[in-house]
Amino acid sequence: MSLLRKREVLPAVSDRFEKDVVIVGAGFSGLYALHKLRGLGLDAIAFERGADVGGTWYWNRYPGARCDIESADYSFSFSDTLQQAWRWSERFATQPEILEYVNHVADRFDLRRDIQFDTQVVRASYDEAARRWQVLTDKGQLVSARYFIVATGCLSVGNVPDIKGRDTFAGPSYHTGDWPHEGVDFTGKRVAVVGTGSSAIQSIPLIAQQAERLYVFQRTPNFSLPARNQPITDGQDREIKAGYAQRRRTARYNSGGVNRIDPTVGALQVSPEEREAEYERKWQEGGLNFASTFMDLRVDAEANETAAEFVRRKIRGIVRDPGIAERLVPKGYPLAAKRPCVDTGYYETFNRDNVTLVDLQASPIVEIAHSGVVTSDAAYEVDAIVFATGFDAMTGAIHAIDIVGRGGLPLRRHWEAGPRTYLGLSSAGYPNLFLVASVGSPSVLSNMMTSIEQHVDWIGTCIETMRATGADTIEVMPSAEQAWVEHLNTLANATLFPRGTSWYMGANIPGKPRLFMPYAGGVGRYRQLCERIEARGYPGFRFGRPDADHATDSPASSPAAPFDIDALYIKD
Ligand code: NAP
Image (cartoon, rainbow, N blue to C red):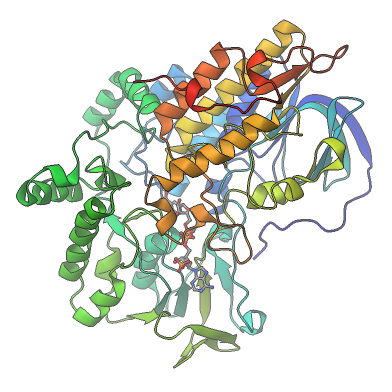
């Protein structure tokens, strides 16, 4: 495994050059940022640690990897020619097909010529005198750039738990987020899968079909919903293509950034029979929409429990052994407080004779030995271990870069108690730094494609505005940042999200600050707020000019005044 880690020793500088923009990452967000900013006439370069484009879809090649957002939604909308040309083959696309799409996008827009692969950005410091970022790569390049775009993705730094004896294991071990490109053949092998999140739940049914024996080490049972994946017929493809304009409009202004009308009825407002029928309909439809069957499932514990109980009954109905079924049933936290999973045959896999569920709540892993995994009450001899143990989500890849802002303040220190941003777009003290679809914005609670495009478009318009007005820096006001941090907490605390020990909360990484990192107010509301801020002259930001720093401060952004986010929302 070669997972991304923070570099302790910086390389010596061997090459220096200037660019208008440095972008970190060539996943979907980096690619679109490159296309957009290049289109504005900016001289941009993207650095990508992988050997090719794709980001998460480049690295996550484990068996069964596919998207759980429908293909027609999980695609770029910025070019109608692109969306009309590309033909998705399945409702939920596989990782190879998505990677093919990413490559198609890179080729169609000739993006590779401005991407340097196999290169990690290790440091970026803001030079206050030059009013530019000095960006250092692991190849010793020092790039001076006006803008620094962090498009590192939310799930790019793998988490391999520090289990005693991990390195003494005799066989191969893999992390789902760093899967060998040539694939892995588990035929005739005894395999351990540690974890039961989305990656595990997708890979377990396929590994079980191949392996001689599969041990699934489960710490927390997850809610998983059936995908009901199917091929997209030619007729459906024509319909999708004819309906893109409406589909995208809907996705941009609803809660999740997908083609769905948000529910307006609460689970407790209908009779138990109606509720059950509605859950059954969504269950049969398949996919994540089940978690949005009623409008109150994310905010009302009693309402949520009706949906959770429905899923529990389904699990008990699928898994034949009642003891195993009971251990697979998620309890003690609301449905969707941890990211729900979408599967094909996950629960059915536990009806196979070659699959064993190991309940780590009853007997935790104590060590990994030469021959396998040892829990407090048994030793499991295996030939291979799959760590499906998730990611240092959202902040991991940002902090893997040593980002230093005004006054030499490292971002890691500024964010010591958790990420601090305004709109999830930038942070006070880090002029001209933009984050794309990461902490502080809807990002992982939404269809990432919708959120990426919205962020990149906003950044593009902002830079155009700066050029039109002669500003060369934009910077978040500390008061706006503070208000946004509080606002994110208020939004999260009005939901059930904080009741799950999830990666949304940083709860999966020992020592990481516990706070809900994304924006929980929904894609549409967030987009309208960003549009408002743009239309009103960017309150919460201050602009600087080469001749008079901060001369164009927005009056709404007076540093002394507390910043009122609520006043900026469009009232219904
Ligand atoms: P994850 O959801 O964080 O799941 C990690 C699993 O590993 C959890 O079951 C966790 O248990 C377990 N684990 C972690 N440390 C452990 C330890 N020391 N001992 C035992 N078990 C341990 O990670 P993921 O499955 O890779 O998914 C991450 C996110 O990626 C998803 O939530 C989703 O947003 C995205 N994803 C999406 C898709 C898709 O589109 N279909 C597919 C894969 C991933 P606990 O729950 O007890 O911590």
